[in-house]
Amino acid sequence: MLIGKIAPGGVRNSEITPRSVYLNRRHFMQGTAGAIALAALPASAATNERKKLEGVVKTNFEVSPDESLTKYDSVTGYNNFYEFGFDKDDPKANAGNLRTRPWTVKVDGHVAKPGTVDIDDLIKPHRLEERVYRHRCVEAWSMVVPWVGIPLKDIVERFEPTSSAKYVAFQTLLDPEQMPAQKRSSINWPYVEGLRIDEAVNPLTLMVVGLYGEVLPNQNGAPLRLVAPWKYGFKGIKSIVGIRFVEQLPPTTWNLLQPREYGFYANVNPKVDHPRWSQATERRIGEFRRRDTLMFNGYAEQVASLYAGMDLAENY
Amino acid sequence: MSSMRIPEFWLACVIKPSVFLASLLPLAWLAWGWSTDGLGANPIEATTRFLGDWALRFLLIALAVTPVRMLTAWNCLARFRRMLGLFAFAYAVLHLLSYIGLDQFFAWATIWAEIVKRTYITIGMLAVLCLIPLALTSTKGMVRRLGGKRWQKLHRLAYVAGVAGVIHFYMMVKADVREPLIYGAILTALFSIRLWNGRTRQVARPSVARKAKRA
Ligand code: HEM
Image 1 (tube, chains in turn blue, cyan):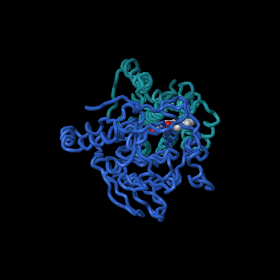
Image 2 (cartoon, chains in turn green, cyan):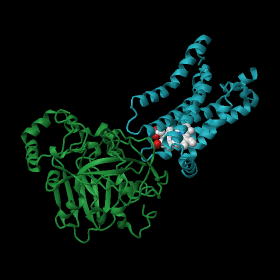
Image 3 (spheres, chains in turn green, yellow):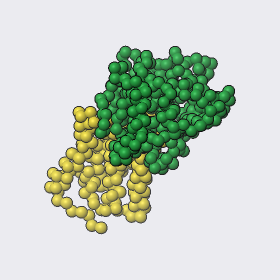
C-alpha cells in the first residue's frame, strides 16, 4: 500500500532485474532496515501491500487465444480459503494478518535429505516462472491466472525421495490465531492434500509464490501453494508448512469431509458429475455465458497418460 | 395483552405502503449492485443466492405473522400477511428465473436434467410448486370460493414450502451449515408457537375465514 504499488499486468522482460541484484536487495530488506520498516507498520498494512517479484521468466504455458486473464481483483477477491472464512470474500478481508515471513517448510518422510527449510532458501535456488493456467473450481467456476512459481519437480529432486516415496502429502499452517476460521470445528484442521509422486513431478505441477508478477497475496495461499491445473482447485493446498513423502495414499481434507463428493484424484472431468451439480460446464469469472469444461481442464495432452487404464468415474 | 389500536388511515395509507416499499428494497439493492459492478467477481451467483435468501426470508416473515399475533395480540399484523407471502413468492420466482436465465442461460435440457437429478434442486422446485397454488388463491375472491376452512388447509402448504426451502439451502451448502440451521430453527420456533397456542387456547385464529364470510 505504501511502497511499490503497481497496476495489474505481467512483468515485461525489460523490467526484469538480474536475480542476484534482486536477492541482495531482498536480503537487505530482511535485515535491519526491513525489520524496522515492518515493525513500524500495522501488520495488515505490511502484509496487504502489493510487491512485485523480480527475475520472473515468462514461459509458453498459455491458454487459447479466446481466453483472457481473469481480472486481478477477481483472482484476489473471490477465493475459497476456508481457514479465513467460508464466503468467497472472507479470505481477502481476513488474511491480512497472516505472517508469511519468517516461514519454514518441513520436508520429511521417504527422502534422503529431510529437513526444515526457510521459505526463502526453498525458493532461492530456482528460477521463477510465469505460467498462465486455467483454474477450475469443483464448484463449477473457473479463472485464468498468471501464476509465478517453481516446478514442483525441481523442488522434489532436491530432497532426493527414495523408492518408497509413492505419494507426496502436503499440510497447511495450523494457527487459529492467524487463521480465525480454524477456531471452528466443522473441518478437521489443518488442511491436508496429496498427490501421487508421478503427478507431483509432472512438468505442469507448480509450487506457486506469486501471481500477476507479484508476491502471492495471503488470500491466495501465501507464501507457498500448490497448483496442479488439471485438477479441481481444492487440490491446490495453500500456505504450505509441510511436505511429506509417503508410501500410502495420504488423507485429504475434502475427501475426509465428503468422501462421495470429493475424491483423492479430483481430476477435472466434464463427464463425471459432482453428486450435487454437473461438471459439464463452468462459469468463467468475468464472462456471462457458461463455457464447456474441458477434459483435464484442457491439459489432457500432458496428463492423460498418468491415468491410462484407470476408471475415472471410479477414481474421481 | 390488549390489541394495538392503530387508526385505519395510518394502516391503509402509511404503514402498508411503507411495508410494500421496504419489501422492494432488496430488489433496489440488487439493481444498484448490477449498475455499479458491486456484486463481486461472480454477479450471477450472487444474484441467484441473494434472491434465494430473500425468498426464504420473506416466507419466514410471512409465516411469522400469525405466531407473532398469537403472542402479542397485534391483530393488525394480519393485514400484511398476504402481501408478505406474495413477496416471498415473487422472490422465489425471481430466484428461479435467475437460475434459468442467468445461471443456465435457458439451457432447458440441462435445467430439466438438474431438476430431476439434483435432490436440492428438486426440493427447491417442490417449494415453488407449493407456493404457486398459494399465490393463485391469495385473492379475496379465491378465499371466498374455497371457503375459509379449505383455504386454511391449503395454506398450510406454506410451512411445507418453508421446510423445503430450508432443506434446499442446507443441501447446497458445502461445509458451513450454520445459516440454513438458523433458518430451520426459526421455522421450528414459529411452528411450535402455533401448535402450542392452538392447543392451549382457541384464540387468535387467523382472521381470513371470518373476513371471507363477512365479505
Ligand atoms: C425450482 C426452484 C429452485 C431452483 C432451481 C433453485 C436453485 C438454486 C440454486 C442453483 C442455488 C445455488 C445458487 C448458487 O450457488 O449459485 C440456490 C440457492 C438457494 N435457494 Fe433456491 N432454487 C429454487 C427454489 C427455491 C425456493 C422456493 C427457495 C426459498 C423458499 C430457495 C431458497 C434458496 C436459498 C436460501 C439458497 C441459498 C442462498 C445462499 O447461498 O445464500 N430456492 N437455489
